[in-house]
Image (cartoon, helix red, strand yellow):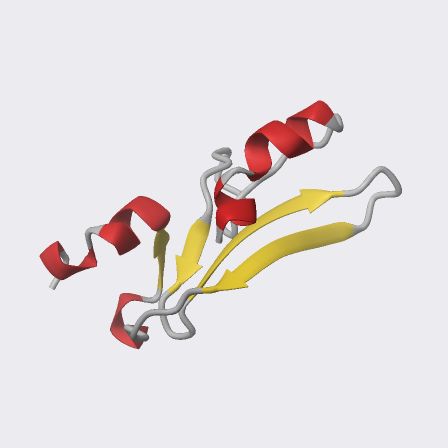
Amino acid sequence: LILVLFYGKFLNEKGLKPYNFLNDGTDKPMVFAWMPAIAIYFNDPDGHYLEFISILDEEARPELGVISYNEWTNRDKLT
């Protein structure tokens, strides 16, 4: 989890641009609530698509789908 949350500095130092699952122009990690897991993506220098993913040690909430980490941390307010 810590690696995924603090990926930005590491990837930026390496000249790599992170993006989220939705590839919507933001680099904030997304949570797959049915697993639950947090993930962020980037392309390596050779053009391969890579993912940092970490399983969260919390109860799955499949009804939430894919949400931002901020939404995940406030999930009790979502339902």
